[in-house]
Image (cartoon, rainbow, N blue to C red):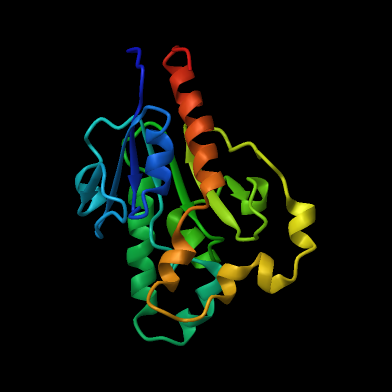
Length: 212
């Protein structure tokens, strides 16, 4: 196995640059990719991530759209025409990312409903909360992992978070409707992004037998 001093990291379906910049701050060659432009500029590929999966990435963190996969929206499958077809498309995209030829992958999404799990092919490997990583908020985040270990909690504030009123600890669920609501709800918490970069980055470098 060839030694590496830094990793070539792809952050799929990210426009905020939060995870990308967490890896870049540790010296990695990190790129984000999304159909939207990056909010912060930098190393960003605007386009379909499926077109760039074969560029020799060491690690991919992916955030595919969750609208038709997440458990919170399952009731709409039985109410809105065309929703089942959109579920099939979303699950196929998710599965294409999870099963691509990159050796180490983490795919992130909220808790999925049973129809999404059956189409993806398996349940998630880990569920974390922002309060596990220094944020006094609650928002379940699931990871499907390939070639990576589950994240270790860095600063568990569960007790303090659970003492807060539901509308405070779960503020993202109570955001008013508006043009930026979806962006605020989908951006990765900084504490989780930092844990990804420090823990997964170190783990992969160790696999390349390098100091880190």
